Length: 106
Image: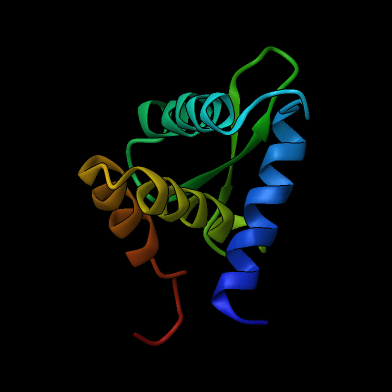
């Protein structure tokens, strides 16, 4: 799987998980994505736990970097940077991409 295919799959899964409706236009979807993905940056201050889903109380649930979904968050940050060219998304994407699971070689 190429990295572009992976990114497209990650965004599609995230959009479905977040309940983005098909009636929204691209600008509205981008605004929703920025709001939702930006929440993760506020809640998760380090890269030891990656945002994955929401708990029943509405709080964000994280997973460790070894989880198979941990890369989705960074991929979504890269997608936001690609579409907006906003440096805050690039900086966040670099931070969340650079985290390696414990015990793996560099």
